Amino acid sequence: MRDQDRKTSETKDWYTPRRERELIRQIKAGKKELLEDVIAHYYDEILRYVIWQIRDPESACDLTQEVFCRFIRRVDRYEYRNLRAYLYAAARNLCEGRRKGA
Image (cartoon, rainbow, N blue to C red; front, top):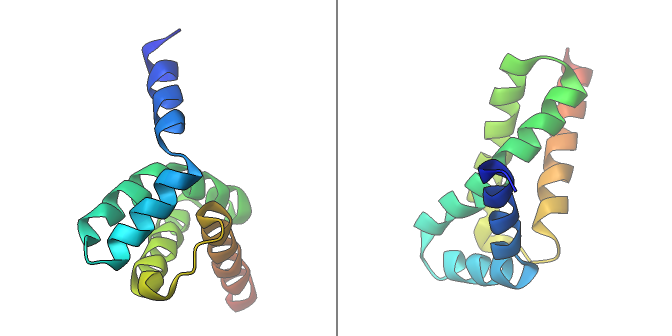
């Protein structure tokens, strides 16, 4: 197994739904520095999705940042269901808004 594949595998194994729920609970309890873990885990995936949606890498970076800024602003009200789906929905909505506004 290549080093990169091993790192990806280890990250996926570490980032379980149970671990994610615990991170969210701790973030809501005041450990805002743990937001970095959430962002680090999902950022590249959401960025790729946004690039695929809008076909503009520069604007995609801005929209991806906005996805995470919105999550950070609303994390105290976030009710855990599926964070990945939540972030994808936020990204989709921002992409649709950009297309309508363009």
